[in-house]
Image 1: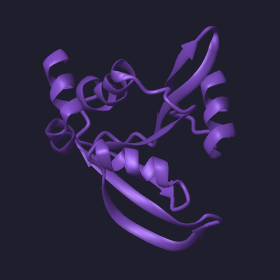
Image 2: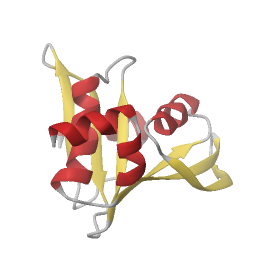
Image 3: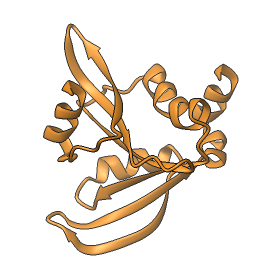
Length: 134
């Protein structure tokens, strides 16, 4: 519940009965979190938020190891408001591709609907590292 509250405050994530998450904690304080929900056996929705610099190599590996290697899902989805250019840039570095952009769907302007397949993840430098440690 504490991790969900963190994500709700940071990105407005509504409660989901199948919500799962982990957080990076430094000095007893959450500095970032990754949440998952909407599991259907083939995919889930993935959410990330945190303070500047919260993601390190271990956090990145853990974030993608869970859906792709532990749950064996072939893909994850993300939805990013157009005003969050930092998140869009990070997601693209992780290998996410845009499926759809809906203008006017968010107070920031629009919503980007993104997909990351396990194959695209494995093509990234972080994905190659996580495949070796899976």
